Image 1: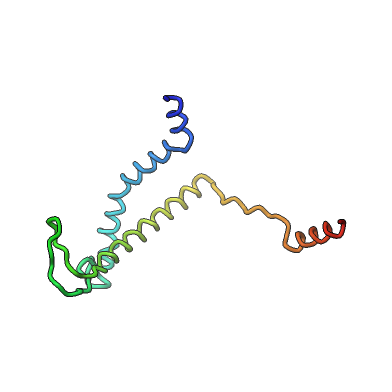
Image 2: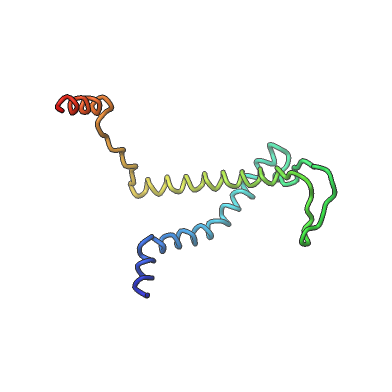
Length: 132
């Protein structure tokens, strides 16, 4: 059983994935700081508020308590906007990190394999059929 477990760990890059997850968790406070301390002040300057969480469309009705949480009949699209902004920032920062890593390691995208053109394939098929 130990050999199987060792093979499992080594086979799928589980160790590298675990290291990546730990680094991602450690990276989260940095991204949160970028969002809260650098981006949201700019958003506040442009839109007058740094946080869109209060933006919502009230659907009517009363606020109800479900499992000790106040639930309001409203579409909280402002919270969605906040999450989208955070996601875009995280995606952009990761893009920059991957780009810098590729440049530092000299990694180049593999060029797609060039095969025969469509005309060459059709000519080959035609010639093959003519030989029959």
